[in-house]
Image 1 (cartoon, rainbow, N blue to C red):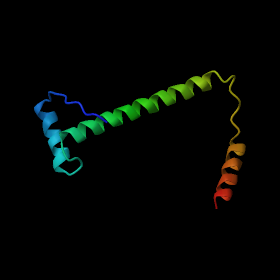
Image 2: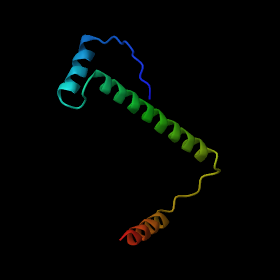
Image 3: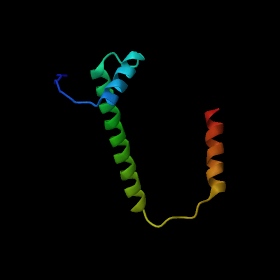
Image 4: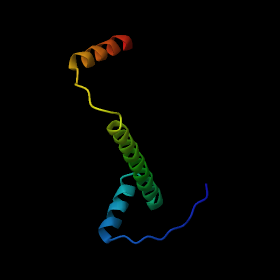
Length: 84
């Protein structure tokens, strides 16, 4: 994977925060912290897209059916027994 150098500008408060993350041992340097933030943002966007897709599929799946709590509990109990 090739690396690209970027120049960013931070406020003093933001810079202090980044330095604190490094000093606490969570990251080795500024670049590691920024890359971690980008990865987390990418993951959050992917989760949001997956959720939106599931919601759209649910909305287009037809009329809702009544909720049968007894059947849900019975299925859960069967799964628990099978897991043990």
